[in-house]
Amino acid sequence: MKKLIFVTLLLSFSLLFAQEETSSVYKQEAGDFNLELSVNPGSIFGSGSGSTFSFINNSIKFRKFSTGFKAFRLGVGLNFNSDVDIIQEADPDLDRLELKEYITTYTVSVMPGFEKHFEGTNRFSPYTGMQFLLSYSHTTLKNEIQFDDEVYTETFTNSPAGAGAAGLSVGLGVVAGFDYYITPKIYLGAELGIGLEYMKMLESSYVNSYDHDLDTTQKHGYSINLSPGLSTSGIRLGWVF
Image (cartoon, rainbow, N blue to C red; front, side, top):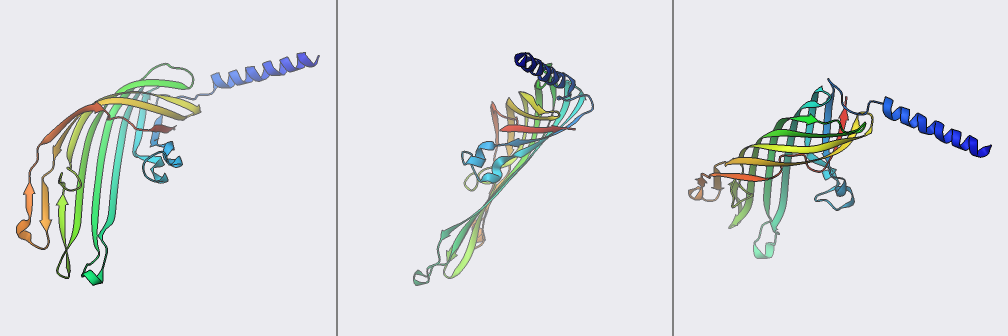
């Protein structure tokens, strides 16, 4: 009798779970909007670069589903870094002043595109798509230098000899990925892609506040890169609403 009751309860829970699986709407539907972050869980445990604040990577993606299988996507990326380092400590006995080095870099990117989703399962939504890139980057390296008892600066802007070349980039890429819904309308996902990127490098300059006769500007060319990229990095965490 006890075995019969146990089997009956087990079957009842199985039927209830199966009913919830089939009745709950986990995946996206026509008219839904989607907001997504790219996250790096490894950084929490020190295996990623940077501090724990790098748990959230530098990209946010928005999607609008025209149907349950077609979506317009718009990715926005922002990467800003500012470092200050002491390159000479003050030493009155040697007539040395404290000197610092300042490095600032930033990149702003916009990535529109579209996706085609496939049937998958109740929770699993695989897709392929295409994405475009428009990006602007800027770099500055400023060193303090000492002449006599005064501090001057030399500044490299967008220079390969300074903090690195910068420029305006355009690109085109194809992507493939999936969304796995852990609860209704909330998913984790991953994405791979390959892209072609053209970068027109900006004019660089060198400015010396001690002797402006040393100031120079230099034009640069362009670069073309074909490689895995133009896709969301890390693990994707999304909310459909």
